[in-house]
Length: 336
Image (tube, rainbow, N blue to C red):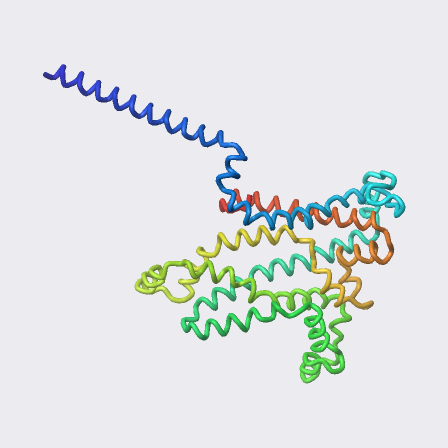
């Protein structure tokens, strides 16, 4: 009996192993079969989705990838009579000219300083605002605060700069009059190179932090309310709720947004900087975008300005890829 029982158990084990082997082979063949699906078959199966995304693909192809044809100007001596494809091939001549220019160092310093201040403070402020708004229990009050904080986002840049000038005019500005009351006599903030960067990033954060906090509020709205109730039953206060529930909930979103923002480190807003510039603050306000405009449009040095713009884009791409890889290794959060 024992021998028969052992033989039966052995047969059952063999049958089970064969069955599992057949199951694995079947799954492998199914996976291989799915991999053999051609792109035409996939497009035929998902054609409604492709029809929906087609306008966006056409738009990006025409207005994003199409203009990249002009990148070759950075490597040619542009000639009006020969068009974009004409002109003598000069290689990296204009890149070397930019690197050897006396404007290279101040341009990079000004651009990086303004960009980093705006990036860091513009990244932190929306998170803090979203955490504070999330602690408001009244729905009406929360909606009112949200509306008030993101409305400045829709003010045009020209109006923002006009407001800055009105507040900081040495003789009649509201802020300068308040400082005069404190016995600070007529400070010319708009003409002070040291004050340009704080004025820029403070106004930038004030204008956009409410709008940028919306995505964090959306992430916080998906948190299970049972977590808050359980934490309160354990005696957690508001700061502990923010530290142990809210912040971990928005960290993946914050990581993605930080990576995307790193792709525009050197893209300081041209319009606002250009409108805030004057002869007094020019040593601290001249950035790559304004210099490219003056060189390319006003002085007709199209090849030189194209080389500067391409250098700016390559540096931004390097920052983007580096930040993505670091985030992928540290927190397993990435965009590609």
